Image: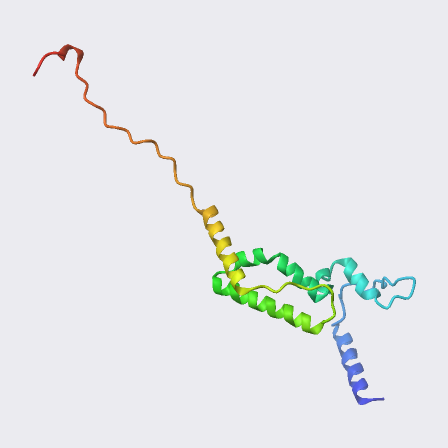
Length: 159
C-alpha cells in the first residue's frame, strides 16, 4: 500500500474514533440521487436548496452589464468624487480584461468614463442634499406693533 494512502486512511480512522464526523448535516439520511445518470446532480441539488448564489454562475460579461445597470446605487454609496473616479476606472479595466479574454463574444459590457462617473456622483449628491435639507418654516408676516388708540371721548381735545 502507498504510504500516503495509508497515512490518509489512518487520519480518517482517528477522526472517526474522536467523533469528528458525528452530527454532520444529513448524517444517516440517504443521498437524493437522480433516477438517471447526471454527472452534475450535486450542483443541481445545491442550486435547488438555495445554497449557491445563482448570479455567481453567470458569464462575466453579464455580471458586468448588471453592475453597470446598478451604477447609480453604487455611486450614491461612495463617499467622494475620487472614489467615484476610482470605481469607474476599476470597472472599465474589468470590462477590458473580459474583452481581451473573450474577443469573439457578441455581448459587450460598456466601458465607463471617469469624468462621467464623477459628474453623475456630483448630481446624485446634490439631489440627495436637496432631498435631505429641511424645508424652511413658513413664517407669518411681520406684525406691526399695536397703535395707541385715542379714546372716543378725547377726540377734538388736546392735552
